[in-house]
Length: 90
Ligand SMILES: [Zn+2]
Image 1 (tube, rainbow, N blue to C red):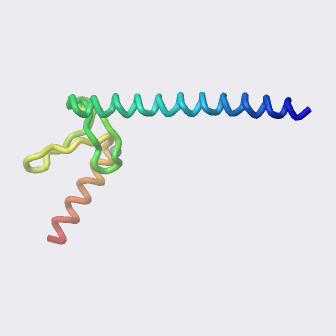
Image 2: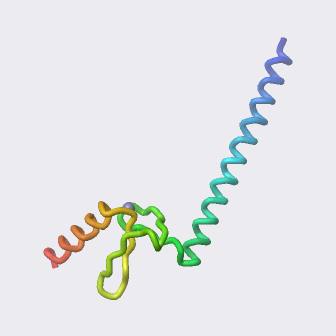
Image 3: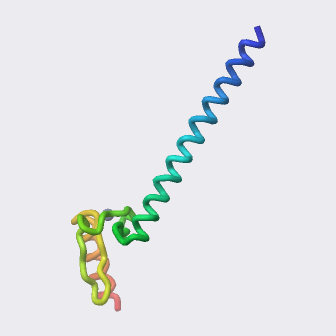
């Protein structure tokens, strides 16, 4: 009965490989798409939580020369608090 175990092991291994390869490819694709959109200027990175947000739908704050984009009001508030604290120190 050892061959049954062997076949099962091979099938499980093949399925495992297919599944992991598929997931890896999908992750790479998502990353590529994200990088593409960042390059196009459609996506901007939230400096607080690090997620990418659509430029149009983000919450932006002008900080002197440059503009920061945030995914939520919560992140914007955190950023504002950080700036305030930095100004207090310096
Ligand atoms: Zn955020």
